Amino acid sequence: MKFKIFLLLPLMAVGMSSCSDDLDETVYSNLTDSTAFTSAENAQAAVDAMYAPLHQIYRDPMFQANDGCTDVCFDAGVSNFEVLNDEGISTSTHLQTCWDNFFQVSSRANIVIDRVAAMDESLFDSPEDRDQMIAEAHFMRAYAYMELSDLFYRVPLVLESGVDVSAKLPLASVEDIDDAIEADLLAAMTLPESYGSNTEAQRPTLGAARGFLTRLYMRRAGRTRLAGGDATPYWNKALNAVNEMLKLEGPVYQLQSNIWDVFNPNTEATLYNNELIFAIRANMDITSASWDLGLMFTNWNYDMGWTLFMVPLQQFWSFQEGDTRGSEMIVHEFPYVYNDNSNPAACQYFQAPLNLQQVATVAKSNLNDDGTIKEGEEYGQINEMTYVFTRKYEYHNTYKYTYRTNNNMSVLRLADMILCKAEILNELNGPTQDAIDLINRIRSRAFGDDNHGLSLADYPTKEALRNALCDERAKELGMECVRRVDLIRMGLWKDRMDKYFAGIKQIAQMKETNEGQPAGYYDSDWRVYPNNLTEDDVRRYMPIPKRETDYNPEFANARTF
Image (cartoon, rainbow, N blue to C red; front, side, top):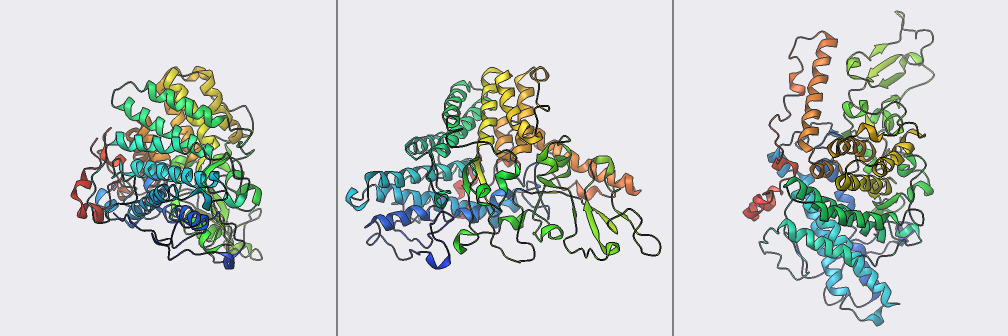
């Protein structure tokens, strides 16, 4: 644990600086207790420092921990996260990055809350400026602890800056953690609805505070329901919170007309689109505000990405025809980036099987015996894709070989909140037309028409609609670091993971059949996955990193339910 009594601020700009280029950046690197918090400028530097760790967290660690270990994402190397290998996960640098950096966020927030509040109002242009800094810190501390407890279940709870860095801190109870998050989010309700400037776009708003309060109450409700208790009070609190959040739809937020506009990194309008409520942002023109997120998710043969995270074929196949979240937001066919169009015979095309039966049947040559391309064909070789990938973080610097990209990471957006309200209504009242209408708002956007909506008659029970919502959230919010949390809250983690692992086995066996291989030839494709999951499995949560449990053995008990 690295909680500092004094202040060190090595970073300033994280995508919200008003700097126009690298030379304009200001670095605050030598502020200590004796020199910091003597002006509004270095108070603002302390606030800005809270955001600095986020790019490291969301580069790829959070995707491993929240998507890569679920049914909507997998790692090219079949990672420890994917096969739920506790020992490998606990020594992972990805998980250590999440732990270190979220605690950095919370400890820096503690410093702001303690020290900026003690500063004289005369140092600021207005008392409101100081109050906003403190409100931002309350939000960021709540956000950090929400993510930490979503990852690890129980963690130490530190709500002050004067903590001995060598102390072995105890694990807090889930109730105390949730109470602290709630108190911080309520303290953040003075945040502005918007900042009126794209340079401030990463800072939390009133909408973000209301949205995370909704998520908190939903989490508490889900835990209470799964423990056999009466979750109604928490679902009612969640309903009040989401209703307050959705009051901002129209004046502040709105659904984009198509899903690509939420993620398109190419235009100013889409980069700062008003469906995003809270996002980790990038500015490729500012070194410290840029990152390589786009490289993680796409294929070198497509746009020179690194192919670290893919979408399972089963997830791709689950999209209905016409659903742009599948047809346009998942890359399932493309021409080779190095094709020389002057020589069609040498050109290659990549294409995924469109269903289970097509596995291992797609690849073919379009060449005649003499090496010329067959009449009516455009490419000499069709290559079968054994995976597909999302466009949500598409890399748009092909041939430039740069790590600096403009991709946003959406932490919270309006579509999520609309689906959350549908879930809350279902948990309170069972299936209703109001809940169905909310889901269909998202589906109408996805299909571009109103002809593909769900029908209330098809969902006679709360459980049936909960299952449908679970699948809808996978389609809409896959690869946005919420899937594992959704599955836990809904009580569907074991069900969906068992189905996902069974699907991997089906693909392996179909490959054997279509290739004429003996039974068991591809067993290694699926036998690596666990077959002993339980409803209350500790593997739903991440193990606290081994470095921390070695120092404080009590941390090994974090996943005690």
